[in-house]
Amino acid sequence: MAGLKWDYHTHTIYSKHHHGKGTVEENVRAAEEKGLKEVAISDHGPSHLMYGLETDRLSRLEEEIRRARQAHPGIRVFLSVEANIINRDGSLDIPPQLWDRFDFVMAGYHYGAFSQSPGHDLWVHARNLFFHTFRTTTKGMRIENTELVLRALYKNDIKILTHPGDKAEIDLVEVARACRERGTWMEINNSHPFLSARGIALAAREDVRFVIGSDAHQPHRVGNYANALARIQASGIDPGLVVNLIG
Ligand SMILES: [Zn+2]
Ligand SMILES: [Zn+2]
Image (cartoon, rainbow, N blue to C red; front, side, top):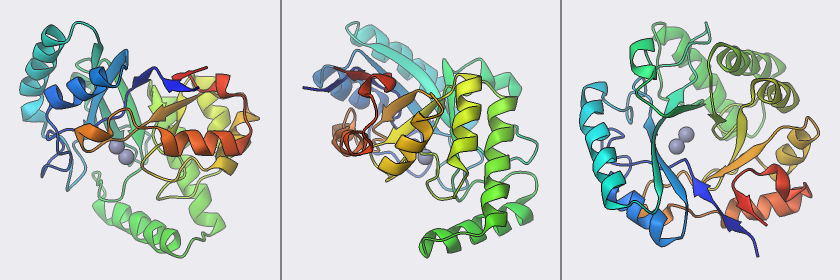
């Protein structure tokens, strides 16, 4: 019987516009009740127009993390962030002076995130959204998306690449190679269909490590992993490659 050791991908009300529904305390309590050993709060990076963390609220978030740690000594609580991969120079939307305030940084590509060149970003998002909707892509888009992700991977110490291939098609083999070289875990996201079973199998050939993330936006979804597990089983990989799966 498989089980989940920890969940590093959970959102709270600190994602703007109450994109996440739960408080820090509620997510931590839910994780503890599900028997997880560790949980991370990982709200969206600040450049996301709709859901980004407002950096002036970071001190309050840190205070809530401290309180949750005191109230729940049986579970390790981390403060993370799901930064946005958007800048063409590979930098993330976490300014250097804020970087150390997170225990670790995860990153993913999202529509709705904008850098200093919003015109170009909009053009990239629009084309990805179009191709995503029609379940196809062009070679040019795939190359552009892949380069964006590779630059981010090599420029930053990213612990987890969230939902690779969701929202924007990438060359999974290239990205998996870079993740292996950089020691970045590729996420098997429980709330999004990526990595797909086929993608997991492809990436596993590059000897990369995977991590399951619930991407919970409500406390009761923290620690959920049934969808991710089904894709892992369908992929036929050794479950030992998934760092937070028991047995
Ligand atoms: Zn995401
Ligand atoms: Zn997320």
